Image (cartoon, rainbow, N blue to C red):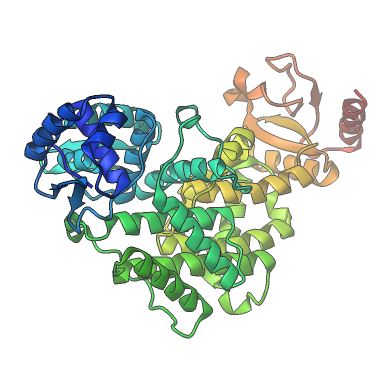
Length: 501
């Protein structure tokens, strides 16, 4: 791999690409044919190239054999393929910068890595920065280096999308991400992706396991980062990863971890640091816990009272905030409690799994998603949980509540109770309505003096204890606070007519 100056002629760059790809002595006559010039021009070019090469490689000339590009050990590990267009190089560069974040690199090193001028790299940076903004990331360029600034989850989200682009191109049947427009039609060229995919495939076969997509992508991103960051000086300045628990060396998880480590170290002639090994162990343990709780197999030994209480508190708070009686769904609480045991382990160990269907969840179940997000934040503020729930985690929780909603509340009639300021009487009325009419969902209970026109927008019926017409043309039933037989009859009549429409 050659390192070139910023002023290399385009033909010179092409010659170096040929020498790099061929990995042999190439004659001037061969080079002349490849770049459509005379051998005499090649001789002149080679002299200029030799003078402009930087210190990390040299051009070797042998009589009757031609020219050979000799690189030192530091550059031997760099990529060896040719990009067919600028967009392919930029996508590769973006993935590289994401993989090493928050470590820094220099424009010169990137120029040497890709055999292009520094001015070309600056144009690449502008292109990359525009894409990064869509994912709440920023390309930071300082005097001491260039790096991607942003939280680790956002970095992994974008890495996962690029990885899924690659998996799509090679025919992977489990792809879940929708490929963004700015990546469509661009080939992902990165030898390390193929190698990591092969390692994960071999591990799953050997240990009879099947990683689901969130954990597969999280492992994929982590392994790529470990490879690209290896040996970087700046990494020593980054805050060490916290050791949350010691690895159980007698466990199957430890054996899988060591197997991955061994394959990585042999393939890349590297030594993984202790923090990286612990990270792999945590991801695999989180996967195993998730599988155990998902199938509800031998979970008693792993159950924690604080997590059980947290699940119950979340169901209660979502019930209060939404008005839907999720607290009455015992199956929801049971399923959610099992899920949250694995989730709490992930959050407490800073394992940020990818949720490939998050965009779809937000688009289709935004109502429930926002209630859960608000409720989780309230519980954090009250000290019931000490870390934020990521949108990925809230997305998975949303699916449990959505199932409950579809089973129990989707066909209910949304109503508004309009009352005087008497709090006790309004709650007595609402409880009587809930018990007598399971087909009704009480969305709001609002005092007469606080009612607004917008309060009527998403309800089908107004039940009022106030002897006046409502301020909007909605079906209204006047009832007494104790809900007598005549009131029940009128409500029952409305329900029958509503479902017969």
